[in-house]
Length: 352
Image 1 (cartoon, rainbow, N blue to C red):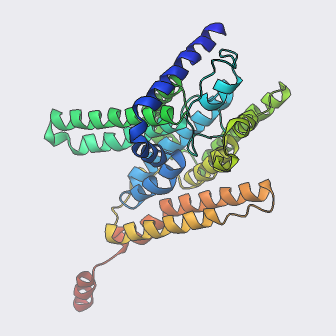
Image 2: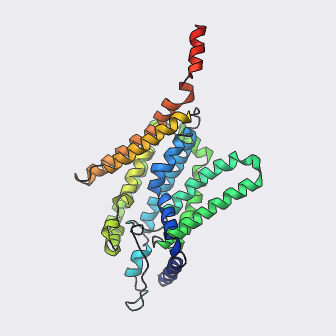
Image 3: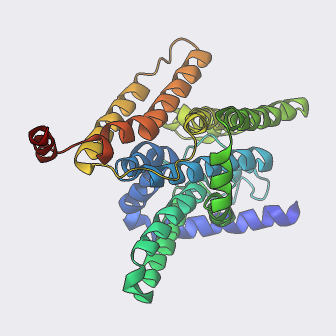
């Protein structure tokens, strides 16, 4: 434990160094950490893919959901501190030499720190997208492939810097998030896994979701039985966050589990889509944009004054309904096979 404390102490100095060097780029780093927030990715960028390709959206959704579930489970098991509260709780520093790290509204996340959810989810998300782009640009040779990989790793670098700059994560938590994200990407993009899940009946897929929920509940109650408060990270965040209004319930592990379960259940009901008709993007993109806007509004007006159960249940239903809509309604209403052009209709009517 002494070695572990010493290493975290050195990583605090790394954070202070990053905050000093990159202070003039704070707006850029804030934009990076906001853009690659798992919730923002899930509510904006990923649905846009549903308007371009149902098959790609299904693949991306499966990868991101399983990765976020893995992140939530590992966070609960490792139960590591975040820098902005560890520095105030540790005995590695005395009251005379305890440094102060910069924090703002992006710092105060009420969940354990390891592995970084931003890095783990973004690694998987970008891996899927860049794999598709790499395959699409294969005709351009090695230059295109190398360029894509440079952009990929550069993006992960800047996300890591942003998370350290705001005191959200230690360096090792960022690295571990990237490594786990790469592993999950390889697993989730395996054709065998996708085909296996697709071949299962709807009941079996729903049973798999129930099993994951039981694992989460078991982790929650095992901690309680061991005398560990499962919400300890929330209390630490409230204790050491400079402004409690910075804290958001949507960043807690419990809410993450609710959000993920709702979306994963919708995917289980529909099943991974391995073959999908092309979309009429002139129709599908506006449709998806309208659905995204409605989803944001619906989530903002989720009832918060009727207890935690009502709030969580409402959120669960919203994530289920909108994920189901992206998977089912978009291809059903905007699929090219279901839409005949005016000329086709005219020619058919004349021939009749």
